[in-house]
Amino acid sequence: MNSIEKLQAFLPDPATAALITSEVNARYFTAFSYTDGAVLITKDAAYLLCDFRYIEAAEKHASSAVSVIQFKKLDETINDIILRKNIKSIMIEEESVTIAKLSSLKQKLCAELLTDSGLSEKIRSIRMIKSSAEIADITRAQRITERALTELLNHVRPGVTERELSVELEHLIHVYGGERIAFELITIAGANTSLPHGVPGDYAIHEGDFVTFDIGSVYNGCHSDMTRTYAVGHATDQMREIYDIVYLAHRKAAEKIVAGNTTADVDIAARAYIESKGFGEYFGHSTGHGVGLEIHEDPRVYKTDTTVLQDGMVITDEPGIYLPGRFGVRIEDMYVVSGADSYSLAELPKELLIL
Ligand SMILES: [Mn+2]
Image (cartoon, rainbow, N blue to C red):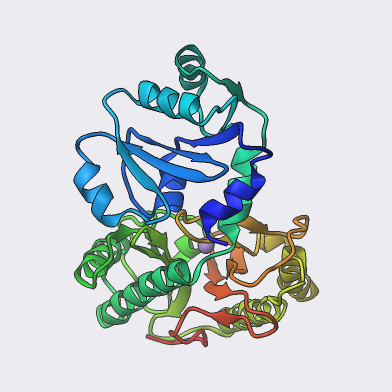
């Protein structure tokens, strides 16, 4: 089943439709990126509603599973379909429709609006399973990031600032075909590496620093996510010890990325190992998350999450240890769940590298 068919199966009857108004979900169902429109999905049809600005591109590029309709007034066009298809009620995305938008829709549409249908949650769950096309796009984004980082590593040396690394990496991601960066790139060094989401600043790299790159790019709307931690010049015994613990925690989590396991199994594998080494209190975030049209998607990879891993999910594995005021280490790859043979989307090695 394609994504639209999965949503149609969720509709209880032909008199109920789903109205998709969030940009990311509209893109997900139509494979077309646009604003100020909507997607209306009924039991047996799917309509991409867009205005004059998008019509030519939509007819050319949107998924063949949707009918493209140009509107002058969105609500009137939706009402036309409502009347023609005898739609009585419309599910809305309860997690993204604002109160103002809801009250406007209530005034204008001639069907009952369902505000607690679970539509948003259902779409999040459908989106967890990636199509082969999505996996190809995520992989492409990952390759772009890896190529950019590989080139940047030639320029990592004492005296270079975090901000310079961030700006140059963003430039290289564009050069190698990324649409944009997947999030504000984290390129931090020295004591700043103990900040899991540190912001690159004026700090200049010193010999003996760790440098952490938590980076990603976007290709065809799909995100990539990767973290590597490198040492500059040399690493102390303690830096090596912490690196090895995080590296093994990453691998132990990766071994649990098997269809049928839960995301908790993955988190606990990394967490229990780090705790066994005495650093549990320094690993204060979840082990991973889904990645796709958004950088953070379901499922959450955490000890309390009971999502069962299924083929086609793409999740990160990113344990870390952060020693305040000293340094931190995080190692992150995305994995595609595939039976017992889940695989990493990264090609860059994860062993400690001294630059
Ligand atoms: Mn991540």
